[in-house]
Length: 231
Image 1 (spheres, rainbow, N blue to C red):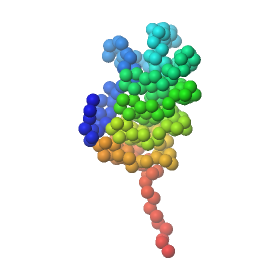
Image 2 (cartoon, helix red, strand yellow):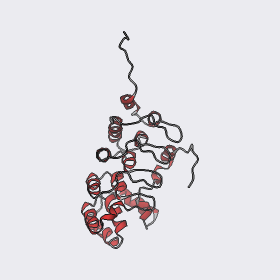
Image 3 (cartoon, rainbow, N blue to C red):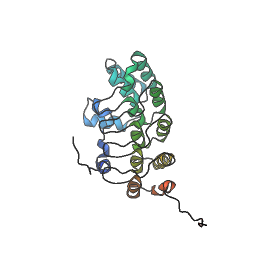
Image 4 (cartoon, one colour):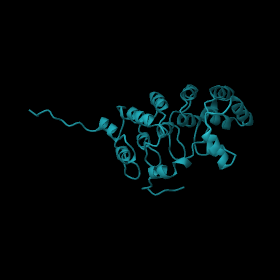
């Protein structure tokens, strides 16, 4: 799908954020109501439920590892990669890899295992999102920190010009604490380029000013005023 140059991805996030493909929608075969029910019950499934899901995907290794990465099934991830190491960089129809899925779900152990298995650190979805974009969009601060330590592109821009900082500045996480910590993490990086603009011409600071209560954190990267007299 083609978008005009001034297309504002952040406006789309605000109005249709619940529809953002996070990988699972590409593989889900049930109804929309069933999908919503699964999301609502996330973390409340029994071990038997997970085993049944794995059984249905046993002959579809690409789908299995994507599902396992999203659902924190570390032993399954290890098993699939032992059988076929190349699957570490597989992706769904939206371009989401196992690393993307583990990143937006906040599963640090799975992220670590995937990187140890030679996952690409900066793979792109069809919209240009890296795993760091995904982690910052959902305020997964521990995962974001881990990705940065392993070479994630701090200033990577999506097709719409959004950086991880833009996405963190949206303040769309249910956890205000994690949203603030994610911003602090990014703003503390010495190679950050905070004044990069999205395709709609907005900096992350401008996004934060209209989107949430954490704009004051951008004082960390504002130019300091020199008060020392010039001799």
